[in-house]
Amino acid sequence: MLPGPSGDSPEGPYGSPAGGADHAQILARGLETFVQLKDGNGAILDESALEGNCAERARRAAVLLAIWETRLRVDVPAPRPDLRPVVVPPVGAVRTTAAPISGPRGAGARIGAGFVAVVHAAGITPAGMIELQGQAWPSRVWGRLAVAALAQETMALGQGQATWSRLTLGGGGLVDLGRGRITTALRGGMLVSRFSARGSGFDPNQHGTGWQLGVDVGARLSLRRWEKANVWLELAAVAWPGQQTFSAENVSQNRFLPALEGHLALGGGFLLGR
Image 1 (cartoon, helix red, strand yellow):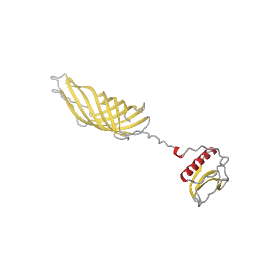
Image 2 (cartoon, helix red, strand yellow):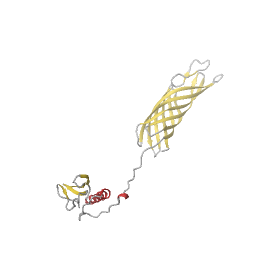
Image 3 (tube, helix red, strand yellow):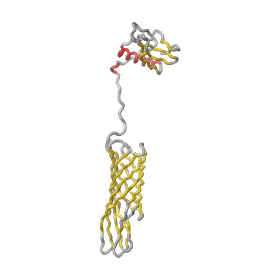
Image 4 (cartoon, rainbow, N blue to C red):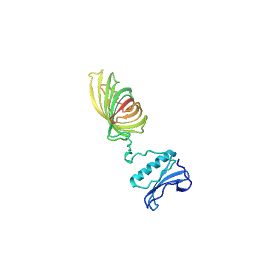
């Protein structure tokens, strides 16, 4: 046991400095117990509180006294008869283990794919997309490249019809707004599209291709299913500035490619590296 008298005084026969040498004392202050290291003039060189139950305080006191004796060659108080023997490992045998660094490190990449429902003035058209995201160091910001292919869409034009499709390449960024099992993200970017069209029911039928620039913004809700894989649901808006017109000879009515689109996508992604 390590109880001691109240006040700030040495506990029992704990020795006194011999010949002005550095020495250690075990003191009791109320219910607290301390170990002090003093020089030959009585100045305090170091002090440490002993916490825990009797066995834990005795063990810590023995360790501190052994360290001071080894490093400073101080006079150690005589052991108290009511303290249990404690095996003190040599100072050189004490080892510390650094905690491993957690979290992502270094460059990273994510690949994903999804199915898209494209909503526009002419109706709803299915599309497919693949994307690649990357970053040079861990952060919430990712660079993004995506390719999307729109299925063929047909619209009436006079006595015939025009069929068109679109292949789009997009580049921009995505910002993760949180970390965890369920997260949200915002994204935006620039688009370049190659569309192709052909007519049927005309004399003669014609076909052609063209290019168009656009912008898109979107919000994504992700659910992490495995350590490196997730599924996501995305809502985006796409704008195609300018006007692309379908016309035919002897047909007074023209048709136009949609200038605004809404995209609802369901897909998944996989983290590469790290």
